[in-house]
Length: 215
Image (cartoon, rainbow, N blue to C red):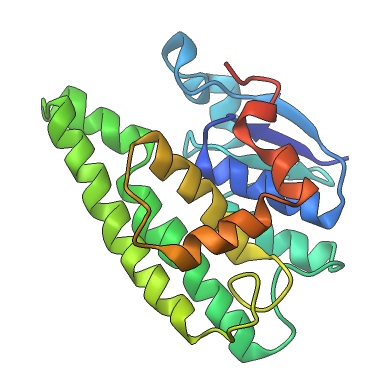
């Protein structure tokens, strides 16, 4: 059974929880609290598993792997049904572009270690940190909203009628945006996709408040 090292509020870990659920894969969760005890991700035992000191880490068939997008691609190759990526090359490229915009452009500028660096090393005050967060999320969401303009009108999700990697990335980022009070009224397509996802058990069970370390 796969083992997922996870933190309940981590957007990256949230993505992988959704993906595992969409695949119908049972997994064990080992919480790695990013705030307690100076950050459990920095403990030597965890650093041996994931040298980047980040979550998530998935261990499957004895293989440890980090980076949520790489993990989801692995899951799609080893457990192909149901797929997280479309069957056609153009569809896969669109889904990867949406996913990478979130995971590579938006999220790295707003994750915990960046916000801590702004606060502790650069002495940026709380209001300026909030403005930083909202600026980068807004830029990313504006691009995502425009990208979804080209999807067929009948599409329920980002690409077609089946959720996959793009939704695994979008829903956690929307959750995170709400935590930091980013206005979302300007993104009706993103909110529509999110609402459709929230009706599904795979997304409900992956939600932060459903995790064993939620507090």
